[in-house]
Amino acid sequence: MSQHIKAPSERPPSQLSELTSLRFFAAFAVLVLHYRDLLGPLPDWVLSGIVGGQYGVTFFFILSGFILTYRYQDWFAAGVSDTRYWRFQRFRVARIYPIYVLGLLLDTPWHLLERAQVGQLTEAAPLYWASWLMNLVGLQAWVPTVPFAMFWNTPAWSVAAEFFFYATFPFLCARLSSVLRFGPGAGASWGRLVLLLLGVTLLGVAAYALVIHVLTAVIPVSSDTQYIVLVYNPLLRYSEFLAGCVAGHFFLQQQRDGVGQTSGLFGSHQRRNVVLLLCLAVIVTRVWMPAYTGPSASLWLIDVALKYGVFVLPFSLLILAVASGRTCLSWFLERPLWVALGEASYALYIIHWSVTTFLRLGYLGSWGTPVVHVFFMFATIWASVLCHRFIEVPWRERLRGT
Image 1 (cartoon, rainbow, N blue to C red):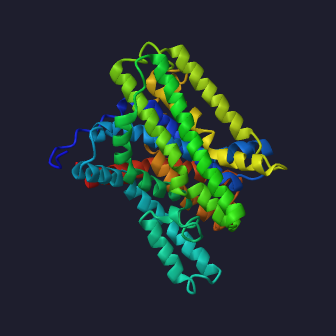
Image 2 (cartoon, one colour; image 1 turned 180 degrees about the vertical axis):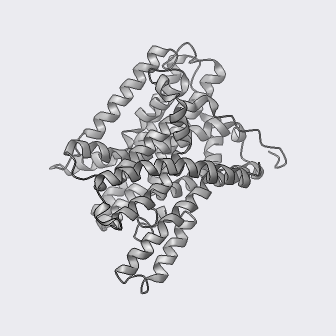
Image 3 (tube, helix red, strand yellow; image 1 turned 90 degrees about the vertical axis):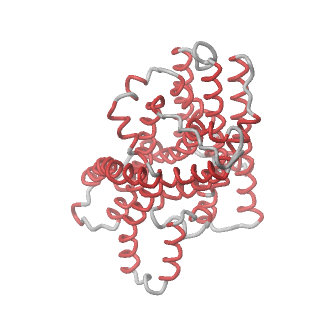
């Protein structure tokens, strides 16, 4: 493919505004998760639900694969040229990097003050600045140790994973475009989709099981290192992104073939509602399901390996149900407020950690009560809207050259 061919325009995202609203609720779940220790004593069942907010990142990874496929599949369906590859990378950097840097800069002063208070800033300065630079370029998710990971603006590890996803997406998209065919019939199409998503899930679970076995039995490492590898490593989280890409290809093919508008799993309002409600039921059940702790080591290994994979199919089908037409939640998700908050959800996800870091350092003194913390939590949502409007959007347009 000639490098001088102009890349086609991005497919407009306006048709998927309800998915934009869902982004806010996923980001809000992560926000509450990181505030849980600041909200005072809470019942165990409430804490269990709040801890489930961590799976909002799984939703983001799947949605990322879906949206990228929806918007850029035409760019890479016939192959990957240098021009289109680097233009895509520039667009993705323009989309996420300005707020990413802002989040790092907002979080940095509090960690410097904290390290200075305990006398570690001077003696460990080279290590901390090396880790800061690694965070600046988005490589922290690959280094399973503190302070490279779990230190500077901790939630940004997922953006480091996204950088890897972006680097591979054009080639993945081209490959999926050449091999994915969902069959001539609506039933065959969605049946194959479910089998493919289950296959992607099993690959991810198998990778987790192997790594867990290695880190616990073959080459035992510390619990912190285990946690960082199992949660942050982009290779282990790749199956979530891949599932979103598969779902995106299915959605586009259904749209182009006219299948799914009146037939198939997502072809009617009633069927989409059934899929949506079943997916939500599975997600909620899993969130409140207690982890297996023994005595069987094999069952424990399977339970841990399934931690994220069990959400791949329900999240993917939920996204497809919402994207394919109106559902029982459309009246709620299409409201301009939620769409606007969804557009600012990335800023919320990135900047909120600096606020929680400040609150945990205790600078508010006696004012640091759960009520005040809740005020800060909602003030952060408002601040994210301002960041989106006055920083994210202008810098995105500037870096894209539009």
